[in-house]
Image (cartoon, rainbow over all chains, first blue to last red; front, side, top):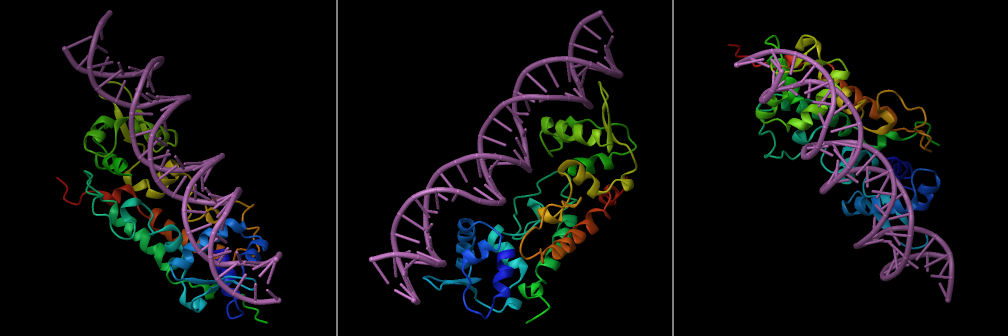
Length: 129
Length: 129
DNA sequence: CTGAATTCCGAGCGTTTCAGTAGGATTTCT
DNA sequence: AGAAATCCTACTGAAACGCTCGGAATTCAG
């Protein structure tokens, strides 16, 4: 997430290399490479190789939500197995008939409310130069 | 959670044994024993040994929230390391100064809003006999 | 008093996830 | 030619999760 925020802050000024991001203290380079491979395949970023290369967002920061990033990197979102996005039909064969499931779904909605309504643009530094 | 709901539904009718709960299909007995050891030490349930023994809630179901149970069994609640209850002060030494932290705290509050405002009484079957 | 039912306790185990490393291949610019 | 970068895949170490196992202590019924 922090790396994506950096990328958003650099948006419009050409590609930003992972070594730049790594040096600003977020995460080790080799780990970033791995994460951005996934983000690229999901179409959130595009990479250009070579000397002046790096990654850039494929859309405006305001068009990329935190929820999208999380889903790409960690899969479907949910507080418990039975209330994860995508509805596993085999769960809740329990005796209580999952009285609790409804609650867990409420929890999930409360989570998504924030994640899906926050975009990378919301982390822009307000003091623009 | 489901086992606790069972216990709440049985509240006022003496102790309920873990083998009863296990047989109703929730979880294996030995695992339940382990979980309820923890719940007991936390003061949410009390156990009586022997033939007609079992566990019972130490308070009214309406006085025990889902949040309490979760905290006892899984520790402090939070969507990410940096936004967990109890505030680790050593986190967020990142370069972005954790622009994202505020958002994660909002996520946490949204989660707690449900968990801390739902009690075991809310899972009572409405068709009382 | 015996024996069954139950809680209580602590150690161990198999699987999965998380975060990260490692090594190398490919592309691109200077 | 060579440096800088992405790209790819496999591995690893630690921790957590869900669960098992063996046994001790307690309590009640007969």
